[in-house]
Amino acid sequence: MVGFAKMGWRSSDNNKSSKTGDDINKMGILSFETAKIMSRLLCLYKSLSKSEISNLKTEMKSGGVSYLNSKDEGFLLSLACAERLEDLDKAAAAVARLGHKCSDFGLNRFDLVYTDLKLGIIDFGKLEYGSKDIEKRVFKMEKLINATSGLYAALENLAELEVSERKMKQWKERKASGQLQKVNLDMFNQKIEQQRKQVRQFREKSLWNQTFDKSVGHMARIVCIIYARICVVFGPYIPILPSLSLRNMRSSQQKEILKFQPENCLIEPIREQIISRSGPIPMTSKPTLVRFYSRKSIFFLCEDEGFGADKLAKNNRVFHAAGPLTVGGAGLALRYANVITLVEKYLNPSESVDLNSRENLYQMLPGNLKITVRSKLSKNLKCMDEDESLAEGWRDALNQIMEWLAPMAHNTINWQLERSLEKTKFDIKPSVLLLQTLHYSDKEKTEAAIADILVGLSCICKCENRQWSES
Image (cartoon, rainbow, N blue to C red; front, side, top):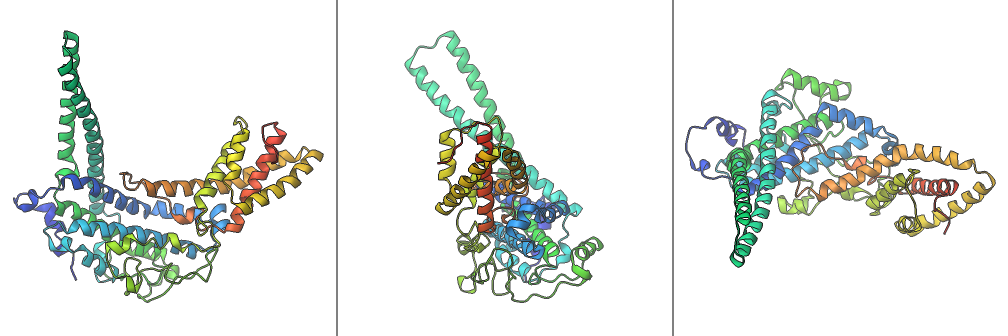
């Protein structure tokens, strides 16, 4: 086992006076990739705070999640745990890749350290979430991320100015320069010099000027802290996570574990197990799709897939766990989310709904849903001809449905945006979980709700004399 003492985390902080090869081995251009990995880790760290876990449990009881996904809290928490672990595995693999550039052996082979951690070999007593030491480290990392983000923006601005500088020099060679032109050129030279100075300042404060050992050391410790925290928060519901011994823990950690554990019992030892399923995910799903860490399965990989970042990159097991009877399993989550948000927009009386808008919305629906909507719409419009007061009833009904359906749609879009922007952002706020989206939602229930809001919107628009009529 490679312990904390061998990882050089303390020495990287305290041994500032010695001049070694580490002082020369700066991160340079890799600082931007490192900042993104750091930001992902801090997202995970913040998502496991008491307030965030409390908010998650509250949202699991919301109308949308409980009706469309599942009412089983244990099942939903197992999904949350699986997604957080998968995100941590990906971040840990990225840290391990950067660790190959470190001189410290523990950091250079961080993959072995992380394996020991998941086997329960490393003492969890040294990994106290929210301690003063860890909070100071998190604060340092936030400052480094902000400075690196500032450096990224400053370099982009400098690149634009340098392009303009080259163009101005070419223009100057072709044209005679007057006094006014000379003044403008001097002002531009002053501006570009100030920008270069800003870049130098950001380089000094950012990850650009940090050594690999120090930066990777920060991230390696946070990875371990996050994993220990996941075991504390989700351990009572996921018995295959490494068991935590109360004897080697501080009193604050003991209270935290006892708070989360049912009947104050210890977490059971590690054993091979597939999580139980409920809700829309069918029993016929492949058993390896929703699988937690075990002694034979590290980084969410099957036994025959081996260990390593290259294999990890090809797997997104939590996402693909949604069965064919779910919205995500049918590949319709983002499309349905866009339909719901458009209906939400058109429900505003001041919003005009022209024929093109209606046609575009209608074409977003799959064939079976088009048939359902047209059938319901035909019946309801005939009823409205006989009783116009039905429109007011539809508005009340739509407001109630949208109250729980719209947040699910917005979360679905946000989840997709967060993943698509992951390669370019430096954001450290907690990310949306799949269980908060339409991904695991029952397809039949979701389509029934969408048909209702489309029919209701049609009836309301007809009553308000807005352009909306049956095809």
